[in-house]
Structures are given as structure tokens and as C-alpha cells.
Image 1 (tube, rainbow, N blue to C red):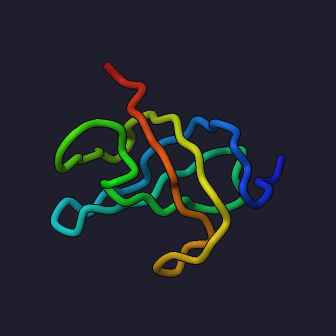
Image 2: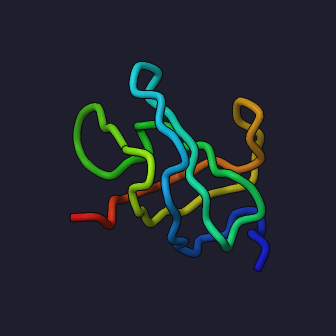
Image 3: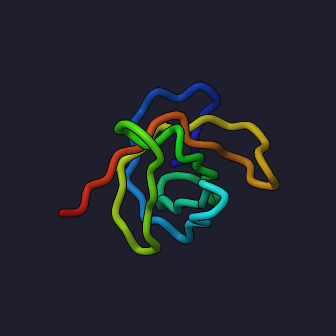
Length: 81
């Protein structure tokens, strides 16, 4: 399944990497054709958020170039314990 622009569906994925000092990282989802760029501001919850490589997440995203990535998250929440 390929993501359509302005898609409002929620996807599950796994954090590929997170750059703590810069506040962004990339998530992979089997339902999206490439990595998804994520800024800490898209992560659900107050304040500065951090994610960890391998962490399961749920997210919404849109097509749009961001720092070399074809997709960017518009909302994300953690699924892990």
C-alpha cells in the first residue's frame, strides 16, 4: 500500500534512528514506501521528546520533502511500555 498525499490514516512503524541533540529522526513503516522524517514537535506529549532506535510507534504522515526524506510525520505516539 502506498501513501497518498494528505492521507489521514494511522500507520505503525519502528524508529530507525533518533538524533537526540537535533530533536529529529526517521521511522520505517511497511505501509510507507520510504523512511519518514520525524521532528520532536510531532511526538505526542508536552515538552522536548526523545525516541529510541527500535521503539514501536504509531503515526500519521504526509508526502513532502524534509531534509532529504520524502515523507514527514504530522503526529506520532509511542506504542511501547
